[in-house]
Length: 515
Image (cartoon, rainbow, N blue to C red; front, top):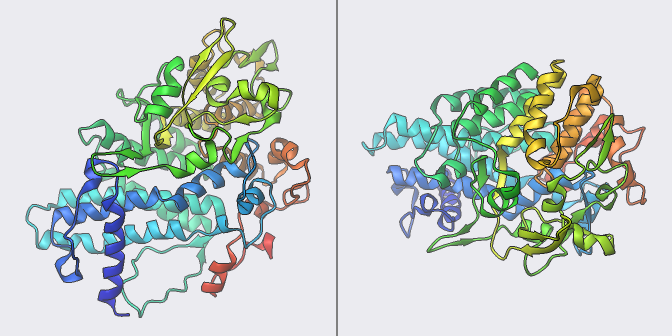
């Protein structure tokens, strides 16, 4: 296949993705018949390809991995009755190289769409005088950030991954690319994001675009996340401070968080979320949230809240610490989990993202839960995540009181009935403070694809899986799998490269734990 045909297929695929997008900006349409010689001729065509990069992230394959790679092996979730054997195995730590969720092709599709834009878009300035250098830089900032986000998921899931920054444009190319070390990939991402930070806009003029497209705050949030993963805590704090200085971002009221943040979407605390929903011409459903978390038609979805976290000593809620009881009446437990259903069944369906609202009895317990029938956006970053990233970094910098202050910003809005905020005297050591931040991130970010990566960061800091086992040991007690145990090496925290990927690319090396 020659270069023109390969590129034609790539461009056509990108544009087909952009055709069904859910927002007006993403509804830009190309000509009905596309040939390479007629493409990359105008600003609107360049915009269509960028739209396709966003759209690729919302595919079912990408979405399922964002959820399962971030939540599946964590203590947050178990599986209910499902025919998806690979899902059962990844949730139960029974993971092998044949598991379909260990395939990463969907993220490399996103990366290749981004690479295609970065390669061809500069030529558009030569043929369309309306497409300025400033226009190009703005779009490049978006695409560099999307590509960096895709790579960051890959690095956290697999550690060492192939670094590809050129599109597939010729059949003479070497398609067999070996893995690059994690630190080299992360260094490249930081460099790319620093470039994106120079040109990413602060606003596009509409709420949907400000939340659904890359802004400076999106770039800063991803940089903060990478710095935290890399244990560069001062840099993480600096990125978080820049985001928190934006007066247009503010936490919602605790009583309205479920509705405004997770049902309605694009809230005042949202930084970047993948857009799902309806326009006059298109419908785009978040099938993964519907299948994994539930909706109006099916309350009992494939995943549920782990029953051992609903109450007892393993629960992050109603936990006695020193002279106080953390989260004794925390609204998040009722808002994020269908607790009333689990009271008599022992099964706790997920309500965050899946629900609209709930009503309460006079004693404050939930009486009725109302599920959504439409589609949920998927939040990648929001303000509370940034606040708690900063808190985690501050603990590592031995700035405990400042870390407590950060935790109280999210804690107090969901525990308004508490007379006092959390007090430093109840958290006298760095280890105790670290666990507090980890608990608060768990309470605040339940089911948002964060928990497993949070646990991994804790393990990476000390170079052993032991602190992670403290949280997942209860889940492993049913004998569903024993891949992570006290004798496990750190490589067990990462996924295996799927067998089909290994067969297709002889340059790949399997994660040594799975050899």
